[in-house]
Length: 468
RNA sequence: GUCCCUAUCGUCUAGCCCGGCCUAGGACAUCGCCCUUUCAAGGCGGUAACGCGGGUUCGAAUCCCGCUGGGGACGCCA
Image 1: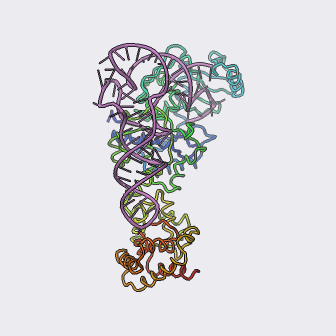
Image 2 (image 1 turned 45 degrees about the horizontal axis):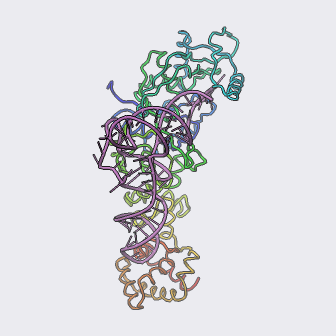
Image 3 (image 1 turned 135 degrees about the vertical axis):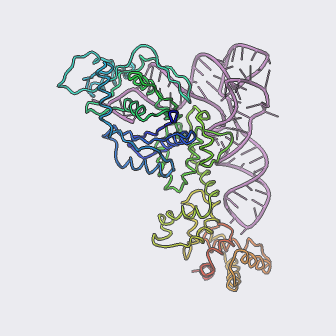
């Protein structure tokens, strides 16, 4: 098992699992599953001031919702501080790192000065050879070689060269003794035997720094693959300004996890002209080579379309199950109310191709479930005029005489009534639709009436006829 | 300011590595038509792109260079 592929998703718990993070997790997961490798979840919580337990839980929840299961972890870096400290000591002992006594304030001031004078805000390395001050607080900096160049052979972007003198002596341990990202990421990836680092290309510039640390320890770096970023409609980096960015917000808006996954994977990855993929297809077809190099704009409209496709393609029973919580959340049914599953599935079936989200579906279900409906004012004005009311009265009488009440039988009754009154079917169907569903748009009226049932149908018609 | 990445319809992309099959394909959105008891779904069709300038070549969306645009990084964040 020496050639086993091992990848990781390493979010920092300083926020919810967002769209960008989810896509990174997804690509790692797909890569692992495609190659029969391992997918590891690691929580990068070295910034103890910003990391919270709640966010760790939120990230785990998001991953589970997307069905991105991991094989090892979640590991937490805060549980591994002793390990990092030992490695820092090692570098210190070998003269590959040094104590820096500059204060955060001094550093910030020099940075601002440099920036305002148009100079690169690079640390000048002034503490490299400074004398030791055991009494003063210090950070530990990595002594970055200033000659030569470091080459990153990226799986996605290709070969990239960096001049080492562009890189500064980064802090690997804070004055409070906690290690920093660029250091722990290297230690952990080695310790966890990660073979491929797949992450956002905002990390591309960190890569040479990290490679130099691998070298300092005489470790062989894993392979790197940097994914292009996701942007908002204005081409700026995706953020809250662009609307919902947290994965769980999409759950709340009635999106199916598989639809989100499908959408996300197509942001930067393509398999010919195929748009809709099952999980198995994704795992089978996924390949780093098919990942594009440029940033992609997040397009909520296409996601919405895809979600609609997933709702259509899913089984009615499955969707009925999924919509249940939304019926409760939106107050359409009480939490303690029980609905007949078979009946609900039938109702859902009529609405699947008319709903882009579970929220929409739940809202439409309202006229199947409730006793009465609220009639849209415009619809009423247009379709419930006196002439139409007369027709509805005829309809009501005809329906009352029916013994069965199936869509097929209902259609026969409607058609013969139309013939008898010498009017078009639509002249009965549309007013009936308004009276029974409250709106001008609904699934086929015969199916609707069958599902609403004789009792409620007659009540609703009666109410309209009597002008109540 | 320095460094890095990147560039095909409004958007996601195929094609590019291995130049001719590209009068550039698919999808979302949009427009029109068909189907139709409404709305959808579906079907058919339309509008719409190789950023610009130089090369290389018989031939360039495809290779090279420059420019421009966009993104990212430069933190005791990750």
